[in-house]
Image 1 (cartoon, helix red, strand yellow):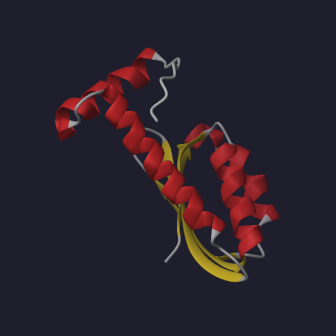
Image 2 (cartoon, helix red, strand yellow):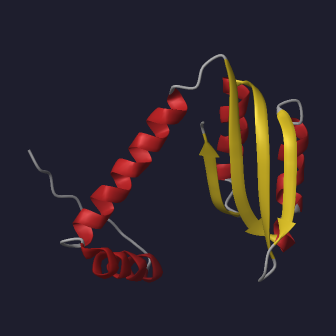
Length: 128
């Protein structure tokens, strides 16, 4: 059974959805949104499977001016950070790459803290 829902989107996001629709060849905006939701659900299910000791890679991007917003999180989780790479990108952005080893729950907690931070422009946890 299909349910119709309504949602509010900022104009910028709607424009991006319409751009994806045209460039990828989706049949409409609803199909773009359904596809995106499927990806999100698959990604969350993958993270839920993390148990015991885990090894993952965390990648995120933030504005250079918001560096301080992430320093405390990094220090709180330094026991699971094996390697950290920080790179200054153009347009005053920073790329952070972490190789994480440790209890899966701590890794998920670190990722969740980074992803929830509104100053994080991109965050991805890669589970090899």
